[in-house]
Length: 354
Image 1 (cartoon, rainbow, N blue to C red):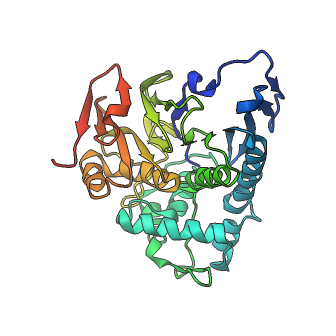
Image 2 (cartoon, one colour):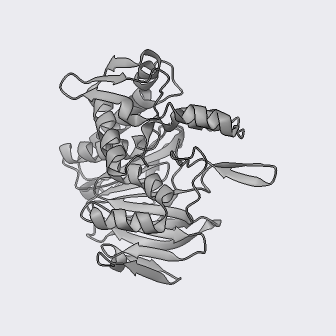
Image 3 (cartoon, rainbow, N blue to C red):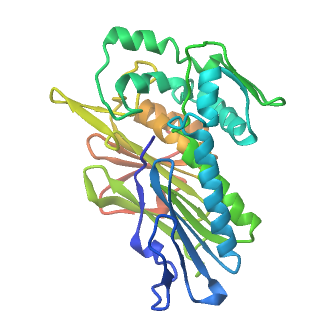
């Protein structure tokens, strides 16, 4: 599971300010409600997809929206978890052919689209390699080169066949297994945004283990503020981004890793080599209205490295923007969000024209 590192500023969490009359229940599924009835704030906290999550909505239908969102998150978690034998993804991995639900079918379809768009850099079939490194169980190990070469033969996602009309997915390679950890939270945050809209909510926020997606603006009309974490310090951030109606998703090699014989191995695997990506980047933050796309691209562009990722953005600049942090601590920001991002350090603007 990808742990993403965009974090919310405290000021954003307190978007309506602090009220002495707030009512809160401090438990895993706790709900807090703002007493200001004309602009009611409802927040629900929960644990799903192996991470802590928070959903907040404002307005008269806020309570209905967050309760539906909570149910939806748990529903998707039960479908998509490779750690649950009864999940739909686990059944597909076991049976190799399966008629999928609408949600899992949608995720398979989107995953294959991003796989093709990134020329295989985003790869939902990389799961056997993740298992070889022990990232699925946290029992870490360094696999042999021979083991990786053999395992990589079972990660060709073009061997996943999906019929959209029948929603039947089939693995042509029977040793193949898939995992949607690289896209599941983004799909989930997008699903929560749909619930908000269906409930008539116009201002809301979801944080799924660091994946941030906002609906509209704050209730006062101003932008939401999202802080991008500094990979070298959990207590500091690189800069602050102002957003409306956007998802902000960050990936970096510092998120999950282990050390062996003095060498660090992180969990973002390059599907071309089977080894942790080493392309000169510390972190990549994707900003997009499409939460699913943002999730899928955050690791993909990290694996690509700055030059290839820049070129990919130029070809798709209407769909997303990016904040890059290189290994030598240089920040690069694409022109679509350059004016919305502030940092105490120098920021280099990436333009559509080289």
